[in-house]
Image 1 (cartoon, helix red, strand yellow):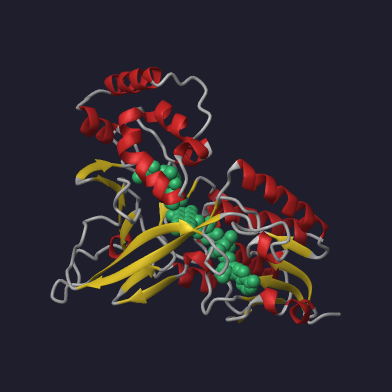
Image 2 (cartoon, rainbow, N blue to C red; image 1 turned 45 degrees about the vertical axis):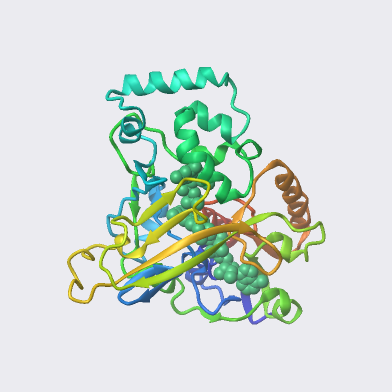
Length: 374
Ligand code: FAD
Ligand code: UDP
């Protein structure tokens, strides 16, 4: 008999949800985390009274009522609705692509006029079956929007030509013929009041956590402690990159604390030209409410500029690059993973998938149900 039933590697959402479910079933759980804090990439830290999203802006959105009810047990959510603004060389456009965007771009007023414009541009480009991100984008919103709001941003974000990227990436964004700037088609949306870290801390309340512990550096000893391992780190790292590393995009955040009360008037502004070196600027206070009223006497705000770069060994992996080459390599790693006895691989890095938070939670709940039912 080992001391713990489960050793959970990683305190992000996948690990934390699994841990919470296992503990609720009376299992003995140990969580380890190589960083010096819990919560993985949704980690928020309070600085100057503002909850700063340290690994990039995280807006919770879902159509899955079960997931929504689940997270609401651990946090109260505000009614934040994401409406980023695109800045193309000083011209401002509404996102996601909607009637405000079409009106600003082409002066069209009705949905019919907007659709006609897009159809004209799609035909001109000769696209029938979109084969890559560029063709998908042009066929969804036309060439003008592609060139001003998509091409530069996407090439900075992914470090690849839009013709070499899969079309599903752009289909993440809604295209609407209504005046609606809500970035997500989701029934439920918001930010946990008090920050994501508090939400995760509530989830894993009472569970033993060892920070600053890298599983892969002490695998042999750690494996002795538990019957089973839940691994949420990168799948290629687990296998010591024996099939060569998968490709990821990494992100560097340049944070600035400014003595003014309003830097950009919105939580997210995307810089969609190719030349601006960062992709977006986040002004964290606008994820919360009441920030425009409070603290006027001591003006303060925190912004983060997001710089995207190709991942190399030693960097933090953020986005899996789900192109054909990497998907093929992932499949081979997955075959190795399937042969590992007593290890479950889960989450964005271990499954090498561009998952949103709600999907990670849904997966973790499902895996836990299957694992814990007997
Ligand atoms: P992670 O949060 O990455 O957790 C994995 C944990 O494992 C990490 O804490 C890591 O340090 C730890 N770990 C790894 N290897 C080891 C090891 N060897 N030993 C010990 N610990 C280890 N989703 C949304 O729904 N809405 C958004 O607005 C949104 N914005 C995003 C913005 C950015 C910039 C990024 C990159 C992602 C965004 N996401 C968003 C996706 C969201 O971050 C993920 O879906 C979710 O956080 C994944 O959780 P996870 O548990 O799979 O992984
Ligand atoms: N995108 C774009 N212009 C924008 C915002 C997004 O071209 O102003 C594209 C880009 O390719 C990006 C994809 O849409 O990778 C998905 O955007 P999302 O906001 O979902 O990216 P994430 O928040 O996951 O970084």
